[in-house]
Image (cartoon, rainbow, N blue to C red):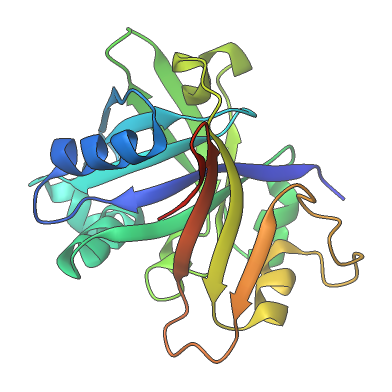
Length: 218
């Protein structure tokens, strides 16, 4: 099985806008926010909150741009922000996207972002259109850029992701990840997964973090 890990979690900006939403989350998590730049293919822009363990929080907002109406990622951000903002997606990085492409029956798409530091980040992703209505399912990506350019490397921090609470069908999430036959707990054993199986809304409900002041759940 291709190696995979949780790469980041995405939070759609609320009515107060990208910067204010990011500043609020950063304060709660004791992290300095970093402007991430624009996704030209998706019609969105983000702010990065680096975490330990090569992970990060992405706070994202949709732009008034034609791409945001056409690209599934832009559509997903717009949909979540229109409901007041909040957790939109969790994102799993894989070494081999072809396995996921074969499972989902479609090709991955290119993503890129030119950062304020002058770096052209590049990756491929798949599964975004499925999260618009099913935010309990992650989408997948493979970084094309070297690891030293990973958004988590913008700053060192002791804050780490420790738990996800997900609404909806637990077996469906395992099937989506391709781990139906894997032992329970074999995927990301350091992350606490909670499932609300009778939840009316299949979404990412809460994310927990370990900070210097203890556990913070948002």
